[in-house]
Length: 170
Image 1: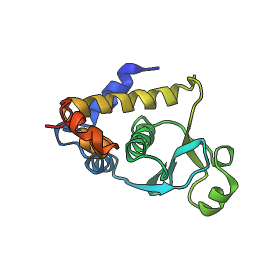
Image 2: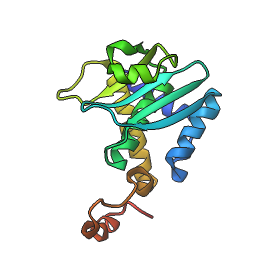
Image 3: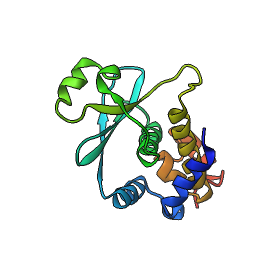
């Protein structure tokens, strides 16, 4: 895996993580690439959590809609990494269930999926994308923007008071 390439890609975003919001990061990438990114929640079958499809004039990021908001953000950042790092795509017939292929008919012939891995993958592009997410999340924590990363201090109301004392919000 090319750690320096991933670090440089994040640096090249020239993004102020002190002001992090997922929407503004997506806007930054759209502006740099001069290409719209549309994020869509989708009820994927178990095992498939995300998908990037580069159509002719726009990029689509599909994410599992039936998961925690924090996981949705992780999925979107992972798919965004594929875009930023210019990863190769795969034929959609190899990665999508037939009913989703039918709905996407005419959108694109290729894409990049994110599947739940029961073991560490040796796919370098998947490793790069996860490293990208890790570095982005690290920047967000340093910038004390956890609410924008997680959607909340804690999904358990009784723990919110403890999470607020951990220094994640400022």
